[in-house]
Length: 92
Image (cartoon, rainbow, N blue to C red; front, side, top):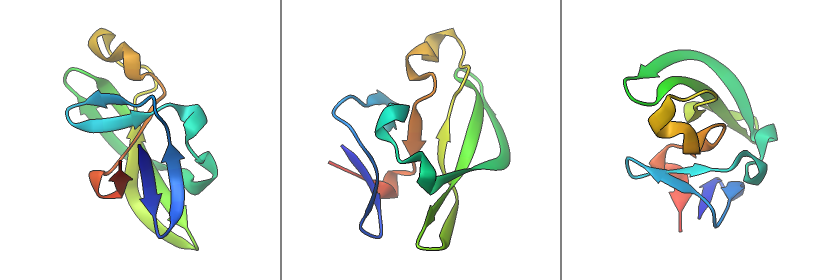
């Protein structure tokens, strides 16, 4: 599975976790240098508090195009620290 924007591979992994039809990539498989933390706030009722990231490629910024749950609730512990990208960036 890959997350790609403008021919730049943002993440690539055979070990994504699928939650609500979204692929969560292990952090070690993500190019964190393409992400910068956002100040957007959102709390999912069953996953917990999300951390959002802007995607930056070739001086272009995609606001809040990725997110993670750094300390999720119990039912979502398996995605702790994984990064999820908007579906439009994810390809098999």
